[in-house]
Image (cartoon, rainbow over all chains, first blue to last red; front, side, top):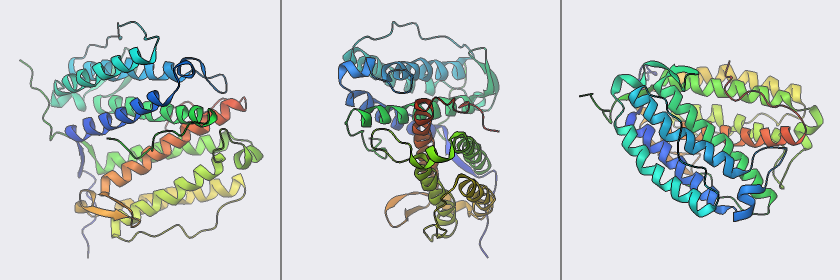
Length: 161
Length: 161
């Protein structure tokens, strides 16, 4: 007879979580880059936001969430919103290394400790991080619809390199 | 000085992973239900699939993935594709309890063991499961664009109950 699953079995370590996150961020970067400059800032469907606004939301969430989980201080992104694709990608790449740095500062107990993210969302640290990742997957999927509607092939979903 | 993060710190247990998955499946169920019957099976944007086809893909992935990780047997969903919203939701609800059952059968070592899912995708069990969840989030986000384009408010993304 096989041993069945232990509910407390470790599935994901802190290191895995960061790798999953950065893998998704690499795919999102390719998605931003797949848009023609003007469409990135203007095209939308169903009265929704252009993809540049969604990407800016991801930037406003990623490092501030890692910083908040690390320190208990929930601070908004202060940098001005990029107005060109090149600027947006430059900020994106800066955030990649900042995210690694902030994530490495998270004390182990903060992943499970409940905190009120940005004064609003009460959850354990890892749930807030997971929410940020899921939010990025969700809206990036919407960016794929924009790209398809523009006749552009989106990057393969399974590529995270 | 604060203790910093240990890369091997447990973030997610098997029990957490199943809870996250079922939470997303509850939101997807609400998304299916938000579509008018005819639009669920016919409406699309950018030459993409109607949302019923995406939902059917989620069904064809969830229990078969859990079964594959549990047993090493990668079997396609054999049930016929639903042709009405009521049928689709009925199959969805049946899969909810089947997923709990299959997931509970996963032996601990299978979460990390590398296997070739459906003879194609080589990855540890947890990565294949995570891929199934992420794929559902991604395409459900596309369903949100369809709903918005139809003038229908999608269910709140943060609600998982």
